[in-house]
Image (cartoon, rainbow, N blue to C red; front, side):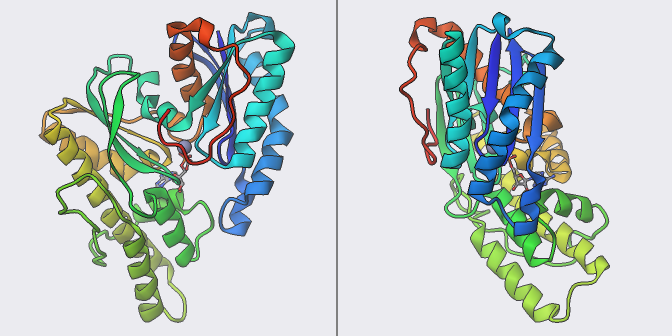
Length: 334
Ligand code: KG4
Ligand code: ZN
């Protein structure tokens, strides 16, 4: 049985995993960052410190297991905010020392990459997986749990970052992604024509900072006195459509190029309802299966860390008695 801990950004999460089954997955989101328009790293670290102990109790209680039944601890050690990662890893190391438990450092991106497996164990290799979050937008060719390659990534802003920064330009609070998703349901996605950066480039890379700049100029020019509610709906729908068009096109192109039958999306932006809908339609058209994690596995969560942590632990139990590992805020690969 694995106790998993995730604290890489602004969600503190603790989960209990047994044989790839999620016995509990408690997530505490730090909504207070919205008043600052983005995550404040030091406040995030302090909030993790405040909640991590009680969340661990809650995760064990919901899973109906005693700490003595835990065989190993999995913890996110990269990438993410350094201070936030240090809270989770230090807590995990303390627990490991006091209980004599092995400890498995896990890459957060690997957690997202395989989060589709948490609800769909039939997922077959190879597949292409797109991790779209506030910090990352990358496409991976995944051959096995140990072997995966980045085939494309963003050259500047991540898709979630684009959603959040554009939402801020529209006067919406952080994180703006879910609000744009909600507003877009009431708007016309073809009202405004925003750029679809790099959509026709023969690669699987992305760039979203130009789109953000284009929306900034557009708002300054057209709405100098503020944006009405109906215009917010149309703007949200049009911006969302521009981002989704690029994400869907690149992922489908990658799947065709690498001749895989399954596509997977993961990360916070994979919660976007229109993205899920359009990707499913395109996958059906190309006779591919599309796997999107359940909503509580899209956002940062410890279940995905426990899932991959358990696989690592079972493949080499003797490897995880070392407390010397540190955190790395920028690493993409294991
Ligand atoms: O994976 P995640 O929880 O944290 C990071 O590792 O970044 O992703 C958070 C990101 C934020 O940028 C947020 O705005 C975006 O995911 N997001 C969404 C939606 N839900 C979350 N973006 C668009 N539509 C959504 N429904
Ligand atoms: Zn994430």
